[in-house]
Length: 183
Image 1 (cartoon, helix red, strand yellow):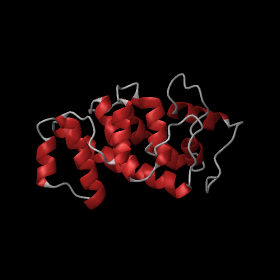
Image 2 (cartoon, rainbow, N blue to C red; image 1 turned 180 degrees about the vertical axis):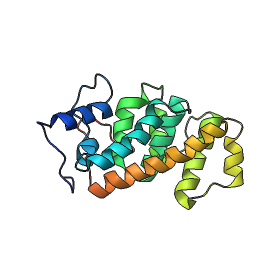
Image 3 (cartoon, helix red, strand yellow; image 1 turned 90 degrees about the vertical axis):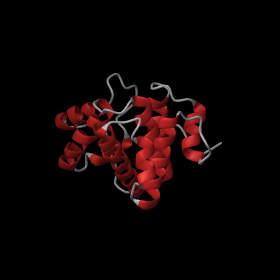
Image 4 (tube, helix red, strand yellow; image 1 turned 60 degrees about the horizontal axis):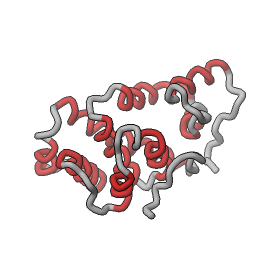
């Protein structure tokens, strides 16, 4: 049970519109539990929407690379909620394999291309030290331009923040989400 109760339908027209903006077009499920809790503070939810949707819908990183970063950040943070949502909604859509998803949670060497391995290593280093060494930066540099590298840093921080929120609220997995626990 979430530490802060999510909004439940019927929603006010303003909340209905706002939640609709947060969901993917044609979503077959209720608005996410995280979104419904965040809307307990509509002003905060509005501010968070701009960055979150910008990273997902208008980012400069290739979608598979973005989802690898999100999966690794949320797995390292122990955020089963957010990992499971992205694994269920985005992973197969962007071409991630079950083996790649499992590798984001297990720490095992994954079936990564060099640029993807550089992302995994950089996420791990940021998670462990809140810094990025010259060697980690140099491993990313051949694969990404300045705009993409800035986005990578913001993306890792954003999903660490989302992990703090979801874990701090004790959000339970969405019923349709994937399990982040290694098999």
